[in-house]
View 1 (cartoon, rainbow, N blue to C red):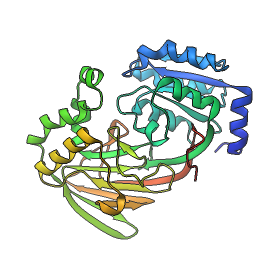
View 2: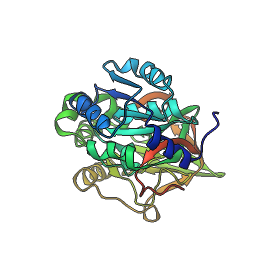
View 3: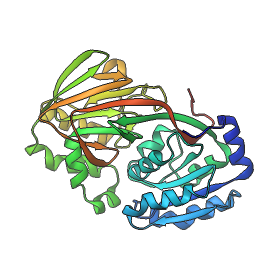
View 4: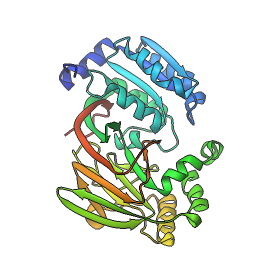
Length: 312
């Protein structure tokens, strides 16, 4: 692990030296449309990037992130959706560099969890006026994640939702795709062991969150990406109609529930087992299967956030 400056020293260095590198996924929903606008806004604030990369092929994202970090910036500015930003989080975890977020995706869960403006100019202004904070890093087995590990219907939705539908209607593309999958989906049994206590549930959808948002809507008002806890919760139950109602309610109203009033399990570490074994969607990538051990690494990643962000 690299020796880290204090957050105050890091913030001062960004404001004084303005050493930044920029990587923008131009295959994301808004990346291609706003690439040059983003660069103009960054330059307009007095930043002279050490490197600027446009990612045309997703498979080359890691290469571009490595090349950007090789310039030794104080702030790595990354534009794209949650999958792009999750890759960036994995690259900078425990390093003396802060992540600057350009929310250019469909749901922008990570940016929402950081309290960032979702308009491009507002998000970029944070680089000049905000502060460096450290937030929690999730781990699914040995795979870092920024926001969410999910199991059930959403894994099939992620692999089925049409890119053109996301481009046209945005967030509602996910619940609409779920409607086509639910009729043939079978519920599964999940066992979550936390602090020696085993919780059992039957559901079509289970999420384990590090961040505060899912599908672009707030999960619960008292969840935080900086409280040292993971939160497991189900949508609906084993009944398809209940899940359908929950999905449609979130799509229509974006409503949230307090953790005190809903079926939430919290902890620093969780063992998840399912019957049958299932694939896991970890920040948009399906690479792991249950059983999975999930844990949180407090203050594992540095990010640039608004001054109003509560840094614990």
